Amino acid sequence: MNLDLNELLAMGEQPKSFEEYLDRHAGSVGDVINSYIPHGTHPDMDKYLYGPLLEFSQNGGKRHRPLICFAACMAVGGDVSRAVSAAAAIEHFHTAALIHDDIADDAELRRGEPCLHLREGLGLAINMGDLGLQLVNGTVAKDPLLDDATKVRVLNELIDMTRRTIEGQALDIGWARDGRYDVTPEDYLVMATCKTAHYSGAVPLAIGAIVGGGTEAQIEGLRNYGLDTGLAFQIQDDLLNLVGQAESTKKGFRDDITEGKRTLVVVHALQKLEGAKRDRLIELLSSRTKDPAELKEAVDIMTESGSIDYARGYAENLTSIAKNRLNDMVAPSPARDILVSMADWFVNRLK
Image (cartoon, rainbow, N blue to C red; front, side, top):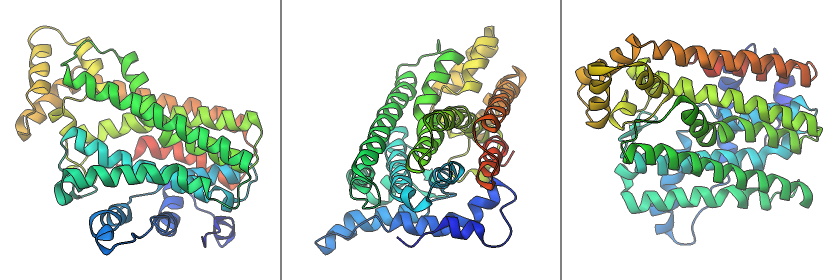
């Protein structure tokens, strides 16, 4: 795998922000990640499996998960080449999770394109998601740069990450299926931490520190930093779906309302609202409406309840506390600066 971010980051001016770091390296990192997707032993395997999965992965967005894995590795003084297989594994897990998530939510749009199950059919899309999951552990197990003890530790991290994500997804889907409107903000935080914070923040950072040779204090410190900022990332995702720009989400705008998602905004609003307003919000969340006027009405109700501001403030507070802790646990370096900037990017994306 021809990737040396150590060398790339040493060339010319350092990235001034996390967003610049992503923009500079997302393309080359994506190419490396996609190189782990194999070809089939029969041409039709490429037609029905490997080819569509590769095409989906090539439309892969910012690649923030592998790139924060690399940043954590560099922050503890490690060699980025040792983090490549694990970073690729996490990104392939992300791909699989998106494919299965879109099926579970009966979603229509992903990354500005029709969802994979709509393009390729339900059965094939499920199979492609399964392949993405297979690539997670296999990618690390075959890495010649990692010793066996490190492989086992990284694989255990990936196994725990997978279980936690599935647990969070079970809560997210189950609450919607059962029409649960007794979910509290505390319940939401458990769900979102499991579903998103581990694989979008904590595990990429912890694994980067592990393969980089960090101390146990650095590994756990970076993991906790990722839990806080990863949770903020999910809260901001929820906000963007409600009050961002429709053309910038590259996903169904306000489809969290259509799907009846119990976001932090929703559960906070249901706690604060009473009477007709609360009943109307529940009616809108239960109706699976796609009517723009009704979607706006739901957002207006949640805005009037103060829940939009509450969620935004909660995410910003999480990142503020996390940044202060990070400065105490990792020595100053360009990589640490990138990770500090990451926290701000997580809560300011398309704000």
